[in-house]
Amino acid sequence: MMPITETFTRPIVKHCAVCVVTAFASLTIAKAQVVNYSSCVELARVDPDAAFDAAIAWAETDLSGGASHCAGLALVGLGLFEAAADRFTRAAVEGQKIENVERALLHQQAGDAWLMANSGANATAAFTHALTYIPENPELLFGRARGYELDKQTALALQDVDLAIARNPAYGAAYLLRARLYRQSKQLDAAAADIDAALANGIDEVAAGLERGLIRFEMGNEAGALEDWQMIVATDRRADGSPGPAATAASRFIAEVRAGAPTQP
Image (cartoon, rainbow, N blue to C red; front, side, top):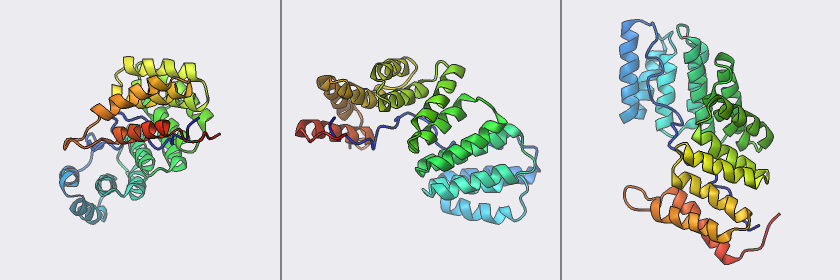
């Protein structure tokens, strides 16, 4: 097999890695704190630095966990994902007036932040905490599967993604993840079937095509792989017209195939 790297084989889906929605909207906390929380979250959208400073100042009197959550959102905006994950976890643990579902969401956001920081072990731990509050939730199982995949624990990732699909048979992103896991396990026919299922359940052609090209390449269908990747190069464009991340990866795969590079184990 050609030395096609897997830098960009993770699903490129329109998935909210760390939702910036108000996770605490239903909290029964003092009106003044709601105002602080709402204004802090809004500030995090436009000025993360200022929002973080405001959240730290508010944390001195906050008992809701809202200050830690807003600080986490601000840190995501600043690209400080490990620190953001820590703040989300603190909000889940320290919040005194939040429901279990809200604690689960905070642990989920911590897990998403750890995924963005490429820390699989920490991500799986966060999603496991979330699952203690909402057992067998497909979104949480999917998140933990992504963490396991980062740590190259393919069998555990497959267990979780199988459960996620069983709980939600229309979960397109889970089919795409399972297709990749099947490919990594050399179960290529199953991988190809899951790509079809991903497309049938809302995954766009660019996200599915990058993985389908890899599957086709490993099945010996070089022409089919090149067709997929050329489609991505032509269609994955940023607003300014420059190649998107999937197009960049596809271009690299095409170059490696055409170079006839030595095979690797």
